[in-house]
Image (cartoon, rainbow, N blue to C red; front, side, top):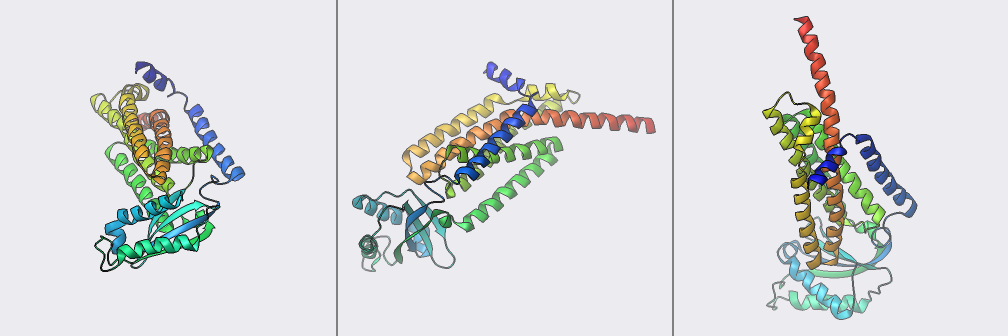
Length: 326
């Protein structure tokens, strides 16, 4: 662990190099985006979709049972979907969209048989939990990007923005503007690197990416705060300590790597037992852990040290000016 800590502290004086690495990865991601487009097997392709629309009560109370019926039916028919999307609609209706490869044939017979399976369970005389529910099944050929739920995107972007702003304001008021600025840059770099790595590795871009970016914000914030909290404590113990000594003595290598390892184990186990759609979330989240560790363990401390030196120099200059005036 001491070797890792020495390596991390050696990077503090190489903020320019770290910035170049970050910018290069983001630029490479943009090149992949413009040259190759979105990952080909999920977002910008022609696909076949099968949509199960249900009334809001059934969607809220019995979503798992509805999904079980559909997935058991697909298994008996030998149909394998790429991923699914759940979306709450306006009014008393929500939908589950199963996205298949464009070459998968969803015939009218298949639609009618799935509809019949739901009708048997939703009939008033049925003893199933879905009795009395309204379920309608339909199929279309379309572009997968059109199925990304816009309302979810807006809510997540707003939530992520509010979280980032409030977190940075809190740290600025509680600690110092240097810490607030460091946290803001760390969060921004984490999100940018995660997006770039997804484009470079060609992982499918679905609604899972939106949730992963929010996960990245939380993960990067926690990891960055491990170090910033130690910095604040060290400053209280010695207010005259210089910026370089302060950050080198406060770097939270053990806490960040331990937290990252725990998240990796959880995501691997989560992906191993989950559906294909959730597996993509786990896989993309693993990339976000890598991005978050880089942003919080390497870039954030190096930036803090640079900005702290600038802040200390300004404070010293202001103190000399006030002394001359007095």
